Length: 501
Image 1 (cartoon, one colour):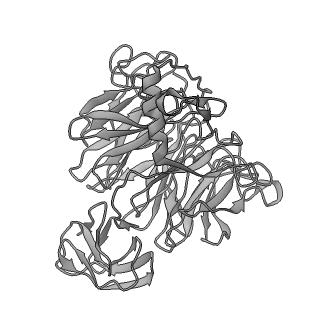
Image 2 (cartoon, one colour):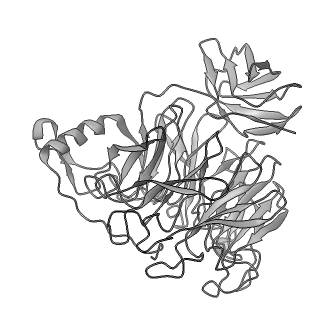
Image 3 (spheres, helix red, strand yellow):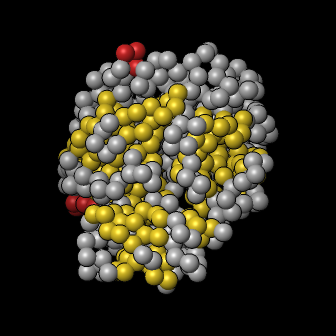
């Protein structure tokens, strides 16, 4: 299965009564902004991130002054500002075409990657919230890049205060399409890079979804291709892998374990780990239902490699999930599918881990199509987006935000908000740290905060702004949720904080 192909979308014929239900869904999604080329175009494999100021930040692959991509900021009310246009320097030395989104550092700056540059095979950059960009690292400029080539995945900020990321190509083993199979790397905020692992074909190829840091301190991730099992039309259907804190690598699962890949194939997104240690993810293809090469799956996997296929998409509920799952404050998982749904333009779905059920929250309609009005009355032409490759983020106000790669009034993608009436919470810049360490907390209404505690133990804190505060891990604290008491309410973190030894 070729995950780099331009994906076709099959039209789906549904009854008018079902379209009436879908029309009701449209009331919960708001288009905040339309990309127009100048302010960006076609966001790809990125998710928005919340900054210290409470605003959301993201990237687009195309658009800007040289059509080489942009970095943008958008307020929760929809004011979109282009902060940086790539290829602003001679011969695009500053980088071009960012595939991945941004990561908030503990210094308040935003960090990201570009897939290429005029003099390199991609960059890692740092950007201030005001839009000042600095290249932190440039991948090598020669034709073959042993340190890594095409960093397309989002960075993560590890508990050691270093960033971790992956590259699609590169590495010393030059036998994945004669370009290398990709790497996992560690990088300090100052740009000191070290290769953590170089993939071999039997281990996987193209870790497009990046890595996460597990509860046990190991790195976990997926590869789109490669592995030890054949795919219908390429050399492997992808893997799940683990890298221990000491650097030991293990392929914990090879997809397409059986003919026709009922367990899934080609995971393009990264993993999610819940507080009980279980890992969850999606595959773009495979599963029990036929959509050219399968409609895709949702799966769970233990840290030692026991996989369970939890859901096979059937086209009607979505097709080709390319974005990572997120666990929202209601405990359920949310994500998008690139295609399928009522109009073939993709969907937003909710997965209930308690019982394994999936429900469609929203069906994108796509430019040039018509959504039926109430009681089967003629509707209006759709302008709500098409083909979301990108993931969702839940901001601390409880609302889900995301983008689509196409659609909208200009056909270049949109930024949207999906309000499901979920309660507000606080988010952690890092969800692990040692006693005495200071961490950042994102939220709203912090002015006048009276108490911050970790699993019931009071923390000393400093309110920096109404949307950001810092707190110190106290002696004797144990792992658990952080609670912030503001003048209006008590807010709990959406993830537990791990106290490190």
